[in-house]
Length: 96
Length: 400
Ligand code: SF4
Ligand code: SF4
Image 1 (cartoon, each protein chain N blue to C red):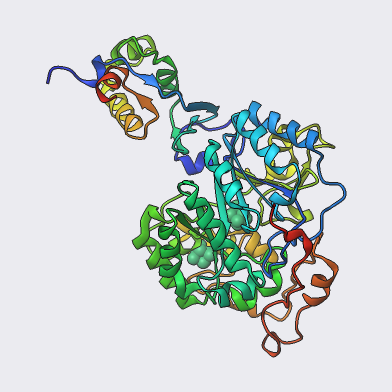
Image 2: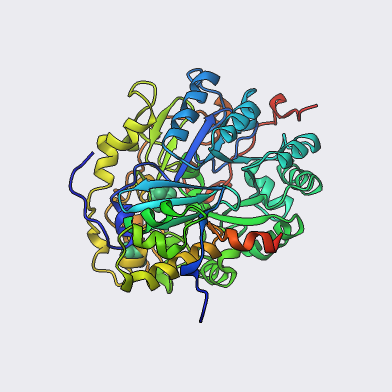
């Protein structure tokens, strides 16, 4: 495997709002009206750190997530991409 | 706020401890209604003179925006009766508070449907309680089936996608689930089934209209087959005791993730719990909605660990959690015991007990004629289970 999601820059979808909660955050997509729960405060800081230019790996490192946990975070982000909460700007051009 | 709160655990554990803002907020804008449905949860009919003004409603929306309440379920009464309803809808959407509103459909004209399909972040929920005019109109009043179907036609022709067809499941319509689904599909809409609760005028008809045990089992299987394609507002989680849980949140969210703001600004734990017992405060008297949500004694109490009472020894307790608080309260059952529709039959004795006292309503906005007609028959079986209907009034007049 060469390129993985860890190498990709990601960003929060334009139509998504995050609401902090004691357990983490709620993410609401105004576009498809889906609500998702981010159950760990660390995941919230990662999602907030996504800026569309740094790779996911860089963001994870910046948030102080130990490397052995990266696969778990990568998986959560894949699910957020499926739920259209997170976008892959690198692919946006190709799809349009 | 309370201090130490355990982190981690399941989402349900966290939800039971409450959230900084509700997820499912219902806001009833008016008690006025052009209809007088026999099972109305809020005993609506007449406008209350103390209803919030346009400015006060805008202030509520501003506060919801600040609290990041992403969307609000607007109901009533019939919310479209308020002359400022369409303005408030636009105001809300412009302030990042999406709107889902419930309507009987009388005012969803072709023009209004066009307007709605051009407005983002608006969801329309049309109430229909029978898949045929006979069954629907017996509960909701003459002409209401035609009005709901016309509204759905207008929305579909205007290109409004994914409207909701909202059905309260009763003994009379429980065999029509496939027909309801077809009506929704034919209109590019989604079916939403919810539970009949003995709230408001629903208390008067509940004994005769709540689904039988057999209907509940059929409903459960039907919902399991339908999966996420049919919405339920998570209202049937007491059926989870029949097997695997249904999709959605399996807990009573009252005061934890759910609440109601009523037309005069009173805040209740749940739209089905309009009673002094569940009144947390008032947004005008208590300095806004946020202080009531975050600090009211009632909500603190609802977010503290609850005892399962007689249910805690039940094998299904983890998924059913004793069912619906409002249903228990309004049938005079203990709040920490089984749901009146407990699928294991554990409430039958309590329901049959001679001493059971149904709590008196603490408010009622039914029109006078409705109130008189809704007196309970001496014996459940010697009168029609349904309230007779008063003639439809001028308020119905569809917008020209
Ligand atoms: S009281 Fe009943 S309707 Fe209200 S949130 Fe609880 S279970 Fe749902
Ligand atoms: S006894 Fe209580 S927990 Fe068990 S099925 Fe009945 S209502 Fe649910």
